[in-house]
Length: 248
Image (cartoon, rainbow, N blue to C red; front, side):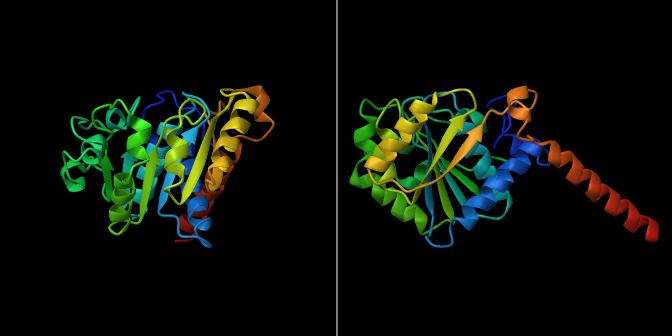
């Protein structure tokens, strides 16, 4: 579960790696690694039922967290309708995935490397095309993923909401796993169920769901404990350090 951030586009894992939110992304990173035991998960897409559920923030911060752990990560913006990842990482979107898909550029001509983040490379969306779903469903898209898989540890992909357009459903058949992002008090339960049903119909491998935008001050959520445990664990760790220092 990912807590609500004041700036929905902030890379909290980069700005404050010790925060409870960053810890939640590390937990997500670990969970994905454990789900990797029976099947090699090298390509994962992130989608949601509706817009504004936090999927782009989730995939962006997870990419940073994995890179910080030493994994070679490629982050691809496959939201060819309303891309935002280039804004989050403050990089150019003049050229990107669409240029490769239509044959104007090669993969390594459009890959970018965000500053301050070792092990992370990115492919932005590029110019918005008139036919996003058709481009993502192309053989060229499969070739791009296959080529990148040989070079890196994991590929994380942002896609549009599956409840709005078919892009995520199309792309889900070309990747190893799908994570459905659900914003707390955003989509109605029926919309989330419909999104899951759409993914199941195309045979997508849904490896998990991430609950985002949690407000720890919301009383309706507080009964689940929120992140209150984090402070207690941190306190215990600090006390142990003090005891060890006292012995020395």
